[in-house]
Length: 319
Image (tube, rainbow, N blue to C red; front, side):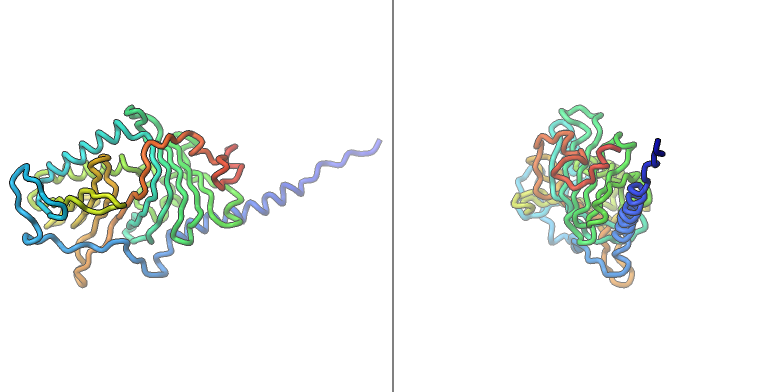
């Protein structure tokens, strides 16, 4: 009776040899994307407008209709009333959406990162107007070039709370890597974790910040109707501070664009205090939500790495 040869371990060896470069390429790509601004100048997507002068502001009686393009001063309470109405409508009516987000921000170390553009699918935490559902996010990065093609899926309370990341490139595409959303790699070059993404959270943070400034005499708010954005005529709001607040997230000037018909803030940006030498105000953060499509009927398939429309490796689905 002939002896039985033990099964060959060669395939496992080759799998490991292939896996290590794939993992390394993903880690290197994450590190590189967070460091790209350190070797080249970063151009801000927006420059700070000059502070509003009295000559720029139109006076109007309460309730008087103001023509598009004309700016009036309003109270912080008036602005917050618009935001609170928008938040209530968003929670009641917005189940999911797709959008093209253009983002640029300083990371947690105060370093301005390159602008990025991503196609995003989001299922909100409040489908049917009932809060408590998990937030679901799919992202496909289209720019900058060093992250083009990267895909990310994050479903709250799934996959041990981790992001699933499929890096672009031949080697990176071989594996899907799970990352803690608030861990070192996922937060590299980021200001906020992915759990803070989306239209609802943007409104919540605006209201929270604005409520502290409700009665601050050093804060002024200006409103301009008829502001063009994505082919629509929307409401532009500007917040200006005359003195630093000393609080976290402080800014000298902020702008937001409100779609009052759909009750959504579609753009927000803020700027730091003027540089002592140049007088320029550095961009702190900027978020623009373009091509918004609301309540499109996203399903679990849209947040499944095995979706054939995505380029995640099949191994991610079995994790």
